[in-house]
Length: 306
Image (cartoon, rainbow, N blue to C red):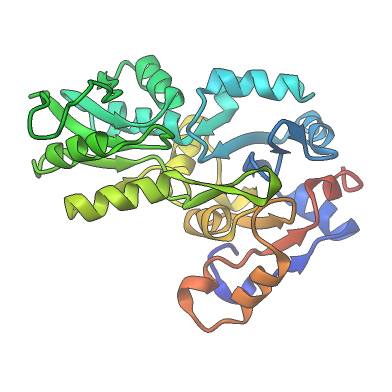
């Protein structure tokens, strides 16, 4: 059963074992970056796996912490990379779920100050959540003399490659109000780029603001349970009949554990088998909950079982 630490052991899935697992599960959750694709290149066999799972009546969802694009843009990318029949309702990004949280859970009365990019802005707009699209580009402006809105009731931090000191300072000022909500799309610290380089993730930006504001953000994306709650409430998914396939131990695998969902680590992204085995052999509880139930080299390993 998912959540029982003694059952977690990086077990290799092959042949009949994988076939039995897929027969047992009705719902498959996939991370995107590093699992379904890398950049603009699909992982070999991924379109076929997704298509065959759907043909066999499985519910398939894509849960991603990447908040840089709206869901409609994800649909276009799936189509561009050869995936058939992926619809918008099957895609849950941290930007979309942040908008849903503000609208349906927080029931926000007022505006959101956003540190983020176009993907966050579009999902907030689609959900009818009012926000301040602040580029903080007024020449010579400082936090000492720039205007602040009086009706900001939440601050949302996501990936922003144009983050500057003034944006950070404004957010910090808004968060001086203890009734102002503080949300982060996700805690991903960094993301891999081509050529071995990396870019800071939303989590690093949220950490900077947490330090300045002396407050902790409520995190919407993985490993928070909220993304799974969105799926479960809309589609009636039973966690015991679901499986999470991801490439990052501290994000995807921990997400599965926290939601009571069995997990599969695929080795086409960030985390390695050696890291997973080291976590399995560690006595630290915070590492034990990041150990996957199963390991595959790639989701192409699903093909023979399908």
